[in-house]
Image 1 (cartoon, helix red, strand yellow):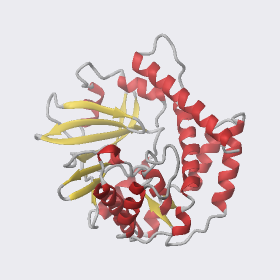
Image 2: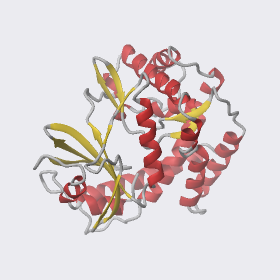
Image 3: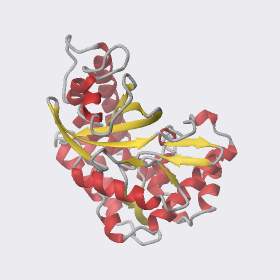
Amino acid sequence: MMQLSTMKKIVSTVDQDWRSPFAEQLLEKWGYDEKEVYYYRGSANFIFVFKREGQWHFLRCNESTERNLEDYQSELEILQLLENSSVRVTKPIRSKDGNLIETILTELGTYHCVVFEALNGEQLELEQLDENGYFSWGKTLGQLHQAFMKLPISLKESRPSWRDHIQFIKDTVPADEISFYQELHVVEEWLTNLPITDETFGLIHYDFELDNLKWNEQGISILDFDDSVQHWYVADIAYALRDLFEQEVDLYHPSFTQFMKGYSSENSVNLDLLTDLVWFMRLHHLVTFAKLYRSLDISNEDTNPKWLSELVSKFETKLENYRASFLKNK
């Protein structure tokens, strides 16, 4: 999640028809069809959808202070190597100058930008999935982990690790968040004692939710590898199913069982680590708390547009809910 001050700055360029001169300036590097550039969303990144020669594409950009260039480079290298695997992934598009990444100086800051082809298919909601849907979802994650295992070690090691997440947490959240740090101490101690082997630990997607999948007759295609990280493979299962586990982690839930049948058809899984799913969820809550804390860099003011005031209130409520959950875990 980006800082809300950055979001406010860029969203203010978007008009009532969802067009933005800021996005058009960035897209000069690639080219676009006139009047066919639209704001799509802002969260960890800004996303704009646009047509080029009649075909839909997506522009993804970040202010340079939000994500470093090296992370962009390793992400795109992963995508290029995965094109030769059994998984279907989004394809990056080169700019007019032949670059996959363009760093562009604007009046609103310096932005790292990439463009992807739009994938065919539809995004599904949790309630739309039947047993076959959960099986296919798990199967695709198993295929992805198999493909990740075959990537060069140097490339995998170029991505951040769970230890970087822990350091980010400590650098972001102030010491007076007592319940937060009590929870962090317990979770970090558990993590440092967790075995790391080639079979259990490696590169994961980290955000294998339905928002990042496109479904069609050929199968499932995968989006957004920007958060890929060195972690335990089981963590990817926990984070993919976090909406299913919103109330509790139930290893006997029929949907989870189908997901794991699909996963196991493509990749082995350490059954002992499955019992630790709740711990990975606790870690994810800590990371999310820190991201929310960092994002909330503006207060609720009368001068804020309505959408921003609502977002500030939403983030503040989420932080309070997390604080309450940390106290319960004591």
